[in-house]
Length: 474
Length: 162
Image (cartoon, rainbow over all chains, first blue to last red; front, side, top):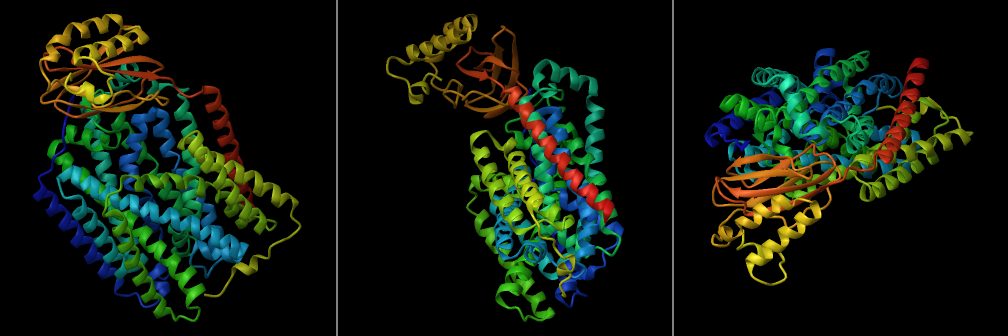
């Protein structure tokens, strides 16, 4: 085994970066020209069809984590790790019925914050805002940092320049085009990522057979095939519940549920889940093949680029550069748009300027997008490595929100005590577990504690919520 | 390596003695006396070359998930070998580089050795792999499965009545 350093000529890297930047910004400006009100900007006029809806559901969920962390999961935790990562698709599958319910209960809703405020009151709303803004900001920071680090590793582009360009491009087209531009670019990015992953999968299989991969793993990495690999089996439900918590609570997904045309949401999230499902499996397979291909891995997060460059040479380096850029852009733009809308609707409109006009709100959302971009840049520029790992603390926070959300959507007896207790106790227990046992059980424990509290509090509750209260006028 | 060893927390004595003591202690603990013997034979050669390849870690904490990353310093290409407590040895790296990630290691004691390409072993690093408790893992997996089943039940039942 020898180490192979990926190297794409920096000039070629800059040309690719410039070409895709111009494409995304141009499309953002083109699609944004019809936006007049906050509803147009934040929810694309609530008129997204099935094709765009399915593509954006899949593309937003294909982050740089899917293309980089799924192989890392497979390399560290084996076949179980690969399957554990792919269970995140259940977040999309199970959000399908929730999207139908959300659209029915809140036809004029804007954000997931609206749901917490109207369903559980201000205390639960405040806790939700703290949890979701922490999660969204750390996800945004981790994506932007990953962008700078990967562009530097792949093409020698300076970290600060690479991170600034990716972030700047996403801020520009999201500010100008709103959710419509985000969803449109997501469609193109999904196609590019899918084609790229399929080509890489076949290229790997043309160089090494499944039998050879299995034999190499059996001989040298037996734990990766072990059905009873302790860390890996613990990661299965932890990752599954982390994925459910991320999708169920975050405004990235709720804004899409509100933006999709009537009757589209359920189908779009189901199809999006099916599009997403094979990607971490294919990406993980690439990592498992690394040994049989004789690729030495200096650090687990670089396994995918190294194997792809080994198999496809310069073409592979170009391909992974484009896939990474598309994966990052499709997630950063969605997070920017959804978080800016959450801040505009839940903080600016509800707490600071209740009487804002639709046009004024659109302007506010654009400024908030710019502010979020600048804040993210300021946090990423010093390249503090530990910042990206803070995202893993979010697992217990999002896991603790699963039961307050699903019971709040379906059960009239779900109440504020259940929701507040579930979020606080679940998150607390999960964080304690995170530090005492490890990340691979923290979300499971958080969700279990939250589940027990919420189900108990609901069982003892005599109150019955009137669904009509969720139908707040825009 | 010898040049680097005192910097990594030796407790005095000549560099050769320090390195020999360290390897002997590790080998004795891991039952790898044959490997230690070959390393000790290489010591005089290493002592004359302060730029000999050396691992950057002094020791690695117990590995509980079967994977480990480590680094080394070297002026040229190196060969890194992994020897298990049953005596089985294999090369895990050959060429130029500065760090490596290994995964999928089963429970057991291992010894990593590094040598300049075609040269004698210049440093070793002991690895102890003890996977997490399977009983605890199965219990926590069961908890996860029950919680997921409850999530599913709430959604499926709710959607059916919707």
